[in-house]
Amino acid sequence: MKVLQILHTDEIGGIQTLAHMIEQGLVQHGVEVETAIMFPRPLMPAKDKIVAAIAMARRIMAGGCDALIAYQATASILVGTAGRLGGYKNRIVHQTAIPRETAPFVRWLDRFVGTTGGYTANIANSVFTQNEFAHYPIPYRRDLRLIEHGLDAPHPTLTMAEARQRFNLPATCKLILNVGRLVDQKNQDVLIKALPALPAASLVIAGDGPKRAHIEALAREFGVQERLILLGNVTPGDVPDLFAAADVFAFPSVWET
Image 1 (tube, rainbow, N blue to C red):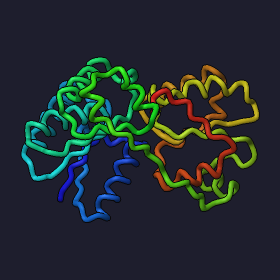
Image 2: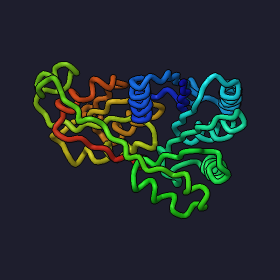
Image 3: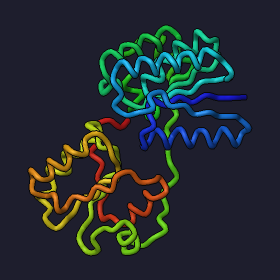
Image 4: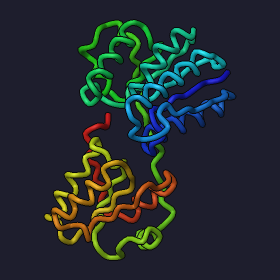
């Protein structure tokens, strides 16, 4: 059996981690898994996204796989339409964002495709997520499946002092850690704005994205640029040791489900 997984983009984050976990689990059961990226570059122009989506639809309809798994609404919509036209009996999608945080047109398309039977399984990753679809049509909700996602507890390999040394972080001050892409959804602005009230602490952000310049400018505006440390992207394997380096983990995201 062969499964094609489709991700919206190749950005490092929770969805990439989830897809990797599912791929590992399926491979252990003898399933061949291919993971494809729908939009290979961040912040692609709309016309380039249309071209990429058409190319992925053609790839789906060309066949060669037994099942499709999608993450994020745009990839789900494509799987629900092209996958159905291509005759795939298993079209599994994940709701990784609550509807009100999805662009209106994308939200409408997802609702339409799901209501008309485009998804054979529509995964809600928490009770909260599932409840956000309570007002959707019955045919859409009929295919909703609650599978609460989880991760094994991270186990750091370093002490706090060793971890701070490894990541070149201040040895003595209090450290607040945030891990996430630098995008509006992750809401790191609120951490920058709060930092003046904590003069003994520094803020460490592990992640990168289009808002990096904005975050740096905001730190200068609030006079905390000397206490802001942007590490850029780190590997998932490094995150447990980053936890060990910090006194507090802060995650003010407005997107998570």
